Image (tube, rainbow, N blue to C red):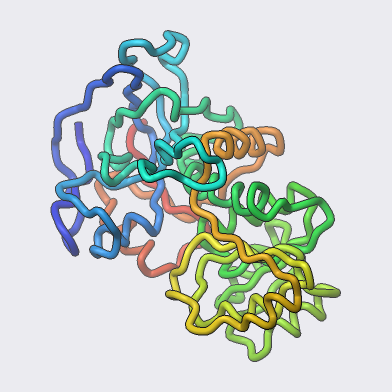
Length: 334
């Protein structure tokens, strides 16, 4: 089969012929039709990720058709269109992943290939209203956004939500789900164009995080502070989120692209009775619930641009530039 192979740190991914895997006990072979990029792929390529090993086929998100079954797999899965849960071996504690938790695409070969083998328990039937490209855009970002909003922050209809840095895959999926759940959603971005696109997706409004004292301005526009704040950046700007949150609010964050928080205004946290909630990926139950939510509400992930598999390196460079609005997808086979 053809696959994009990464041979080492700061090397370009290269399309080459590699052996097609065979499904083992309890596994399925999926002929991939599409795969989506995540920032994780760029971080691995740049050497900014734990547990690096090479050569590796990157890619955590994928959708395709089950073509072969390993021993013990129900025959009904053969020929089914599926999307893949990239989070494996969560463990027995639903509150946090265990030590054996792993994400497809490192340490195990991922979805930037024509075929991938995964345990059958980690495939879900593709919602019929989604194309393969749209379905591939959903798994990692979708389960992260779902867990952040509903499992961790316990979002309720009618609450006011702030999503920071809208434009990335997880943030947009969180926007779509929060709107569908009946929340009032506001956003921040460094791009007025991205804010306008977010409003077109159902956000009430937004503001540039470059604006001085933006939390007070946006809270005034929204008619009050925010019950739930969803963030992926952390870093020096995290203090603004404390100001934006309403008393008793929940701030849930699933990344730290701007680094650790240099100073935390502890007095604001305890005086406003704020909850700071960390979040990473999600359980198998979170994933199943997320797919069901998208099916019930007929939601469609936002795809920024689609590339052929052979242009995977160009897609990774666009991801690194962070100019996209939505997911970047590799189309693999017809």
